[in-house]
Image 1 (cartoon, helix red, strand yellow):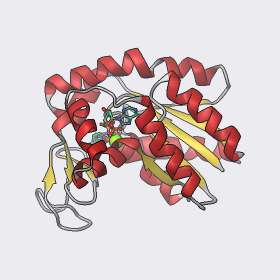
Image 2: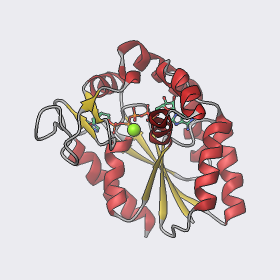
Image 3: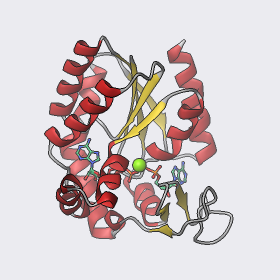
Length: 217
Ligand code: AP5
Ligand code: MG
């Protein structure tokens, strides 16, 4: 089992760029999306997670590690897994290392999307997401063909509750405190590939494809 990690601040474009890697045969696992699915189902886990997510806080490490463990152990997928938004703390990264040992897996690459805060705020405030399938749009940079309707299934587009200005600020703080230390953690293992995410969607996709292809071969 091969794992590629997409690392970067909220709104850097992890979900958007993931699409090109999925086209390359990766299975996209976004812990944020898994949690939103739980919220939509109204499960106990989802209700607990919602309180934290809406305040811009992380859900507990055990919760996300448990979700990833269940998923890896139940999967017979043989290609690369693309983790988007996991791990997000040093404790999660250490647990993932343990999981990799037990499943004979390898982390082959950590793609770091570098993006300044002012760009992030603009991206998150203009983001719209399909209520049903989670496809991501931007009012200016990646608008749907028909206003407020998902291109894929025609469902209504909504603004994520954690994309309010004050919650965005909190998420950025939490990223610096809890997730940025992972850059050093993976740099020490020689796994980081940096990508300038403050370019157009097309340019970021091309940079990732170029570098990912080069690193993977
Ligand atoms: P999650 O859903 O992972 O949110 P996030 O990390 O904050 O990242 P986002 O999904 O907001 O942004 P993105 O980088 O995917 O950007 P996108 O492609 O959408 O997690 C949500 C919450 O769940 C967390 O805050 C936490 O509470 C919890 N959680 C999740 N995982 C957890 C974990 N492991 N541990 C603990 N808690 C966890 O792009 C953003 C916008 O910009 C879009 O509108 C897009 O169209 C646009 N855009 C993208 N790229 C470009 C570009 N190059 N140019 C112009 N516009 C662009
Ligand atoms: Mg995302």
